[in-house]
Image 1: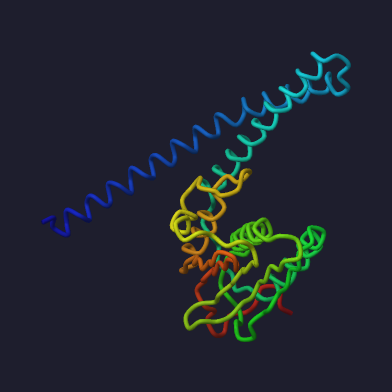
Image 2: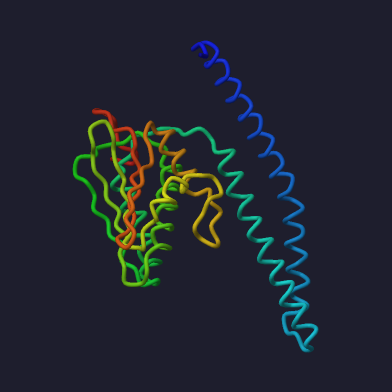
Amino acid sequence: MSSPAREERLSRIRTERLAQLGALLAGFAHEVRNPLSTIGLNLQLVLEEFREPETPRDKRTQKRLSVVDAEVRRLQKILEEFLSFARAPEPKLVPVDLNRKLADLIAFHEVELRDRGLHLRFYPGGDLGAVPLDWDHVQAAVVNLLRNAADATPAGGEVLVSTARDGAFALVRVTDTGAGIPADLQPRVFEPYFSTKKTGTGLGLPTARRVAAEHGGSLELQSTVGVGTQFTLRLAAPLAGHEVEGAS
């Protein structure tokens, strides 16, 4: 059997290697981004020349170039999300009125979802108080959950956002009335680059889970096929006596 000291040493080595690999991949992605941007720009210039194709050959060329352009854009999106995932700064925790911030965020996205035939509703819990968090990080996580919920919900459905307090944690729940996630896929949804969407990069949920961990919490999933899905962002609970950011 392995001794605790040996296991600790091996764990430290694995962590160091993963950190080195992450730095290497981030550097690689950064180097690839510049030539890929050049390719994309030149493709746009060529497509401009075929904006109004006249011959069958021009039409075929335009179609093929459009396919290449779409793939370049997809790669650019993957690279940007990877760099955001790999190089996210350390969170700066500040006491925040979470319900107020979420209410503003919901109001901003409500029109977009309404245009898609969806109802977005917010149910704030009354006992959250001030939550120490990095709002930029948490906001990005919630927006990702909102977009996933909207993509999973057919027109006429609902996306619900609610908050509550659970002992030492503040909870943000995002619930949809979509098709649900099959049980065999649920363990994989937090894997990097795994996505059930054709245009998904598979980094949104891993990023949201990392944000939760950075805030002393977790990201939890409950889903039933034919009923819908709920993600719960669990954050460290507020401490008494903290002032709320932006309060007068």
